[in-house]
Length: 163
Ligand code: PNS
Image (cartoon, rainbow, N blue to C red; front, top):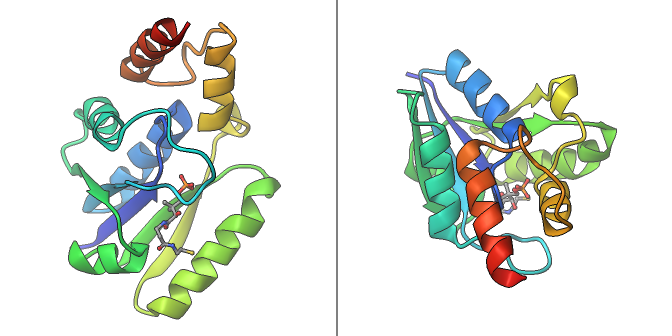
């Protein structure tokens, strides 16, 4: 059985993430979406870990071979814990390449038995990111279609509260 691990901060989950998860779930027997509790990026996340996990759970409930798990360790250690042998990442424009290449190299160095594989974003989502979604939403723009409905509603509520 081939189990994959699709990791990310998912702050919040976008339609681009969901597309990669759906496509990965179609290739692998089993896919775990790993939600990083403390993102390595600057600034705190907009949504709590529990919220980020629940968005992914809600948006992937139609996928029977997908489960969602939070993690707060090295990615390769988490992959070991859940017995995943392949890390799945989405790749958008060339700008993603350097960071993803670095992470894949380091993860390979940490554990050579775990392979990283990339799924290319479709053109619709090539320039979509969680940060862009938050920026658009913060300024009152519509993010309909850019995020799953559950995230759309949560963004509206969160930003209405902060205004
Ligand atoms: O959503 P992101 O920012 O692309 O996700 C990045 C993530 C969570 C996959 C990455 O930061 C990560 O793997 N964090 C766990 C800590 C770790 O293993 N770091 C070493 C990898 S270079």
